[in-house]
Image (tube, protein in one colour):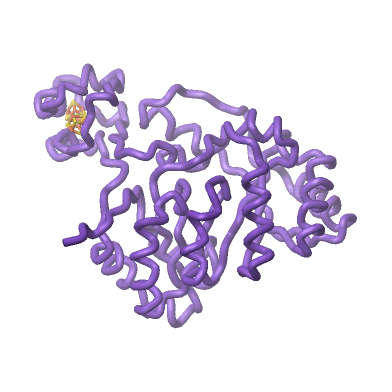
Amino acid sequence: MTESPEALVFDVQRFSVHDGPGIRTVIFFKGCGLACAWCQNPEAMRAGPEISYVADRCLAECRRCIDACEEKALFDRREGRVDWSRCSGCGRCVEVCPTAALRRVGRRLGIDALLAEVLRDVDFFRESGGGITLSGGEPVLHSRFLEVFLPRAKQAGLDVTIETAGHYPFELIEPLLAFLDLVLFDVKLMDSAEHRAMTGRDNETIHQNLRRLVERGVRVEVRMPVIPGCNTAESNVAATAGLLRALGVRTITLLPYNHLWEAKLPTLGQESRSLGLRPPDEAVYAGIREGFARAGVEARL
Ligand code: SF4
Ligand code: SF4
């Protein structure tokens, strides 16, 4: 008997109105091919399950989680130390914690369980023209799961949007295309060396994948996360517009910068860091829109 595939999902967020048309349920898959310095969802980066820890909620006299951990992966939780090489993601520590200082980040869901979860809001989808959005992390890295899940989702009449950063072999997204109603495709930086410095990867594969999607006639909405001082320069805007024009794409959606990710890092045992950036003001967005407009591309917020 063939084993039913499972995917590691770190959140299923209902009633979203920002991730595609209408009211949507967003499925956040874990694992990503990029490591953007400004990643809004640092809990998505690692491909395995994680335990988050909020030190402020932890009781000084309590050691329940340490005693419950058979793998001996926990040491002095007040310092938030986990030996990830030992952690199996079993969740025992989460179950015994009396204060919810520990939380499981990532759960394995099978096809039926995920489908049942998203179908709870099917009436809202119908009324609003919404559906489900596959997000992450990089949902395309879960291609084998999605090849089974998406036909079932379409049978159930669901509209499917995917949010992707585009860094993977095209063969991973190709079998999914017949089931996707909309692809939200992010472009970040046009200079490949700068792209590598800020995301850990060159941008050639991303641009090739975007081109192949557009050439296939897939409904693609290109988006650019606005990272102040990183990709807001006139030269980057002009080069991005040039790429879009060459592909016959005349609109781009600007995604506002949010710095709340910085507070998540310590809870995941990651080193605290800050880009020192704050959301840009209206003048920055106006400058970017003008830059795109000069090149014949309409930038929407
Ligand atoms: S999830 Fe399991 S293995 Fe990992 S730290 Fe908690 S109890 Fe230990
Ligand atoms: S079980 Fe919860 S409250 Fe107790 S030490 Fe562990 S994290 Fe802190």
